[in-house]
Length: 593
Image 1 (tube, one colour):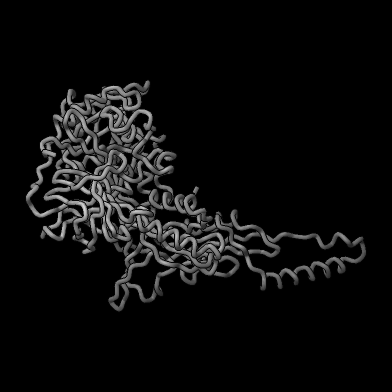
Image 2 (cartoon, helix red, strand yellow):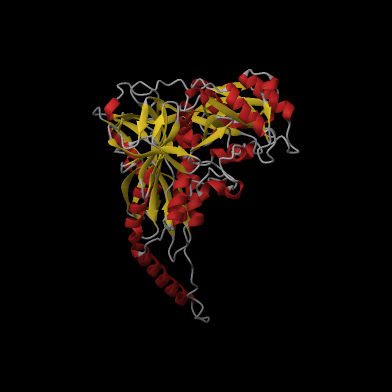
């Protein structure tokens, strides 16, 4: 198709501001999907996406409107997938920015706007949910104007659910978004903005062709991974696959390849064809690095192979997933997996449990640490149990993040207190408008992993929103906190903490373990220790059987004799007795209050 008739755009917004619903209305209005096939959140294919009401995998779709070809990408809104969002933005010339008219601008809105501005996109502001009783169009319009510097008449007012104002959005896309500017005669270059693994067809790439063309059956080549393959089929999504003979410059579509894993064709990589190979890759590719790690163990060791197979299958379609086998004396064989963030971890866990019927024990999530040894070696550890002997360590560096919290100004004090309690440093405080404040801060990632988001929501009555990016690794006074149950160290419970927080955390976790570990017939000591020094202790008292019930009167020495016999038995039991540690004990950190 003539490039001047093509418009490539995406929809960006905070979670739950109505991206997928607007996409549904656009598909309906352009006749891309027939009314009888229509269902809510059509582009969200996974059951999980529908239940949680979030987009996890982005989805492209092609629509026809008044002789124009409109290519829409529905992007995920969550911070864990911000790299995918940035690649989708690179594939477009424009973006529809949706802001909920009742909630206003939130942290992810800001983050996505900055990404769109960095990608030099034309931004069309849209206020959604204007028909809700809680909608405050004037206030939210003022927020958008101060953020984008646009005019009030530039902002489109719609209700995606009720179908109000949808035509104006389509008109704005055609009129305001510039057409692509690729060169059809140059060497072929296409950007992979998503890839997934299909059980029957192999790896399928979603691409935007910048220069040249990709024909069916052409030999393709990846820049970053060097992998070669065949384009078995090329085509567009409407939203189901529809095959074409070739994808031309400026178009967005899919390529069915004969590759075996998405690790060979990663998001952000450049595709070229061997017959007209490009020499320069498209900019912006980076290796996605997981920075949250957790151990996944089957409930019984006989299911270890099933868990391993399931994770290998999942990793075929999720190139960000990294895993290594792990062995714990208590939990047996398992796998340590790296994730992009806590939501990513949650989704992988639910998919393993649902799609593969696994019963899992997940250990406390941790981050990775860089360790410098006295002999000059540098090592990267993913779990506290891997930490070498403290006598050999020069310094330990932990990852810090740059965070942004958008919150109504009445809650600023509480948010700053929360940041400080997590060892964070508040950097800046600015105001988006008269009501909304933007707090920027730096903090250690490990302290935000467990319940920072929950605490932020409760402090701000649900109004606060949070966005972050990885900053750098900083040397801190970090120690390994070990936990002993009945004198035996349980490696799966060990965590890395800052020395200043070790006493408090040791006491807290030992107190929680006391509630979770069942009582035995002998006394069980729970202890927290740093190296050889114990810093906290709780005892689970033994069940007591009254062995003196059969005695009736007589000399007190008879009673003492029976009790002494019982004490001897308990002592022997303590020597040979094993304490069963339940699965809940390993997730005791996830909910700290």
